[in-house]
Image 1 (cartoon, helix red, strand yellow):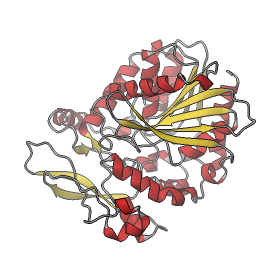
Image 2 (tube, helix red, strand yellow):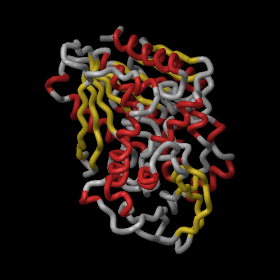
Image 3 (cartoon, one colour):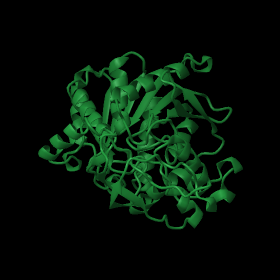
Image 4 (tube, one colour):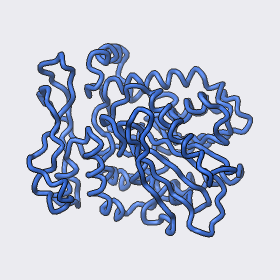
Length: 401
């Protein structure tokens, strides 16, 4: 589960009919957008429903204004983010605001780091957003770290600060947005196949690892929450492809507190077969469960392209099935392994991280549980804890390079 889900939504009942989403921006925003993006109509939020459903009442979410942000930017933030083209424009509009947040990962980010952003077209024809961070000239490059973000999240926003700190220590960082999340193509928050996410990571990162400048460098992969589950399945498919695996609050099992009762779950799983894209799976306030520091929790408002609506039915089924698959195969995890987890995590179960540590066949494995830590120990804890976790990651990498 992603730690950067927004607090800016409140549930409200909507009556939704089958309709095409309007991707345009309101004409009030034309001075903030390129001429080609200037809108002609007012956008309406919409929900995708099965063709067989003539009328459907669902739980939807309406944006609340973000404090300290102009009316124009708030209007941009309220756009329907189902499609990547809109998410890309929204991210661009908020880039400057995000850089001014008073978060230690932003304010204390090392300077001189070289970055690059691009889109890689995968074998399915989807444009996948990729980004890299490279140490400043003169710093010895020790290795390469590849990142898998969590549910609903992106490889931008606060991860930017994480990547800069690790890059400053001598590592090249590569990250991507999974299909359906962040700036990559795909219906927002929709996972029709968890294995497709895994295969996409393997495909894109295998291509990047083939670059001449990365040869003879150790390759590591880091997964956060749902990204941890993706990372584990990547490793299980290609057990000798990585020199080490780092898992932060991995989604090996979803905590009971965020799963509905068994009877309700059974009904929702049946419904997922006929309306897979419907946003009907109950969801608690994951930001409150993820960010221990209340000031940093408020900054989650500004991750405007995170997926923070109710979970789509098929997505929920795929996540549950993935955790079940991993839980039964932890003995096959053989890579050098670092597992980091907040001891008070109510989103993904830290006891399962302990179980993974004990059962994994890795001869080189480390488990660190952080007292009182919530789900997002890399972004939502007090400053000293965040830098402690970052230091643990860098020290572990250094010892293996």
